[in-house]
Length: 229
Ligand code: NI
Ligand code: MN
Image (cartoon, rainbow, N blue to C red):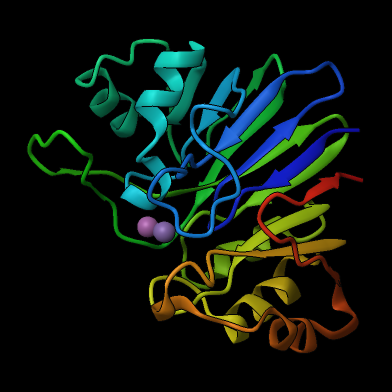
């Protein structure tokens, strides 16, 4: 079974049974709640949901140090090429592909997407995605940044563990995230994208109450490790 480590905000890493390291949405150095540093984390693959700084800001240093392959939308991959990242694979919403770590599908997310990376360059508008990942027999959904969407009903019965934003303001809040749980019916739900700054402060216990017995709510502190079912 694979292990997931939550690093705060939307950043997490996964270590598969065979020791492959995946990092999702690397945001370490300017992340006020992060447990570790971009200089310490291991990566063979870096998965990026969209181009906002709180999801992409540490892609370049992490990819350059580790040589990890970056997987994201074609538009994000094209942008990263201008920053010297060539070991990358572009996909688009609705497309799936088998990788050495398992199968990855990009799924719909409703959100904005201009890239603002350190070092400048013109703003670059990109689509946003969620990640549907099958690794060591676990079906994981990292929703990225998104509003509640009817498309989540397409995931019903296809997700074991869902990472859902609950911070409100930029994404779903607790009420809509609880409705997302009704739509998706995962076994386990992990709230993310809250508590990083005051504007997205939320009490995950309120979210747990709203979900009720529909799913097991696993609240992870930054640095906490969770074995995927
Ligand atoms: Ni965003
Ligand atoms: Mn975000």
